[in-house]
Length: 149
Image (cartoon, rainbow, N blue to C red; front, side, top):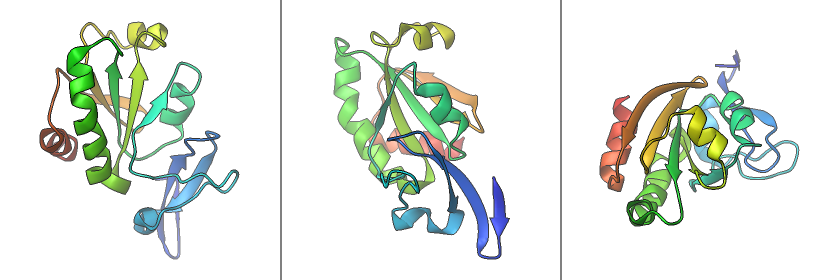
């Protein structure tokens, strides 16, 4: 946690628009917090696309668990899993951020994380990889996997 106030602990959450680190009361993450700099919703329940430019900053500035879907547009299982990933993003709501990395557009990230098959899901906690799984997964299984880690 980034700290606390008399109102409770604070979490740091990166803005999906401008990548600014924002401090949000942990108890208020479900209240649709917005970026103090640009006004973008911080936790909108939608998967966020990241690339080589934004990946490290977003991971480093977000204390919530982050699930990264490494995928490619030509991958049939990736496309089939996309609706389940969106559903899981809504279901996990403010307790985790779900993001997507197109391995064709960001080959450096794919190489850095040793992505050998897609889709591959990596769960980050406190900026570090804490779990990984490959292959398409349904929304319920994805949600349970994140909560169990």
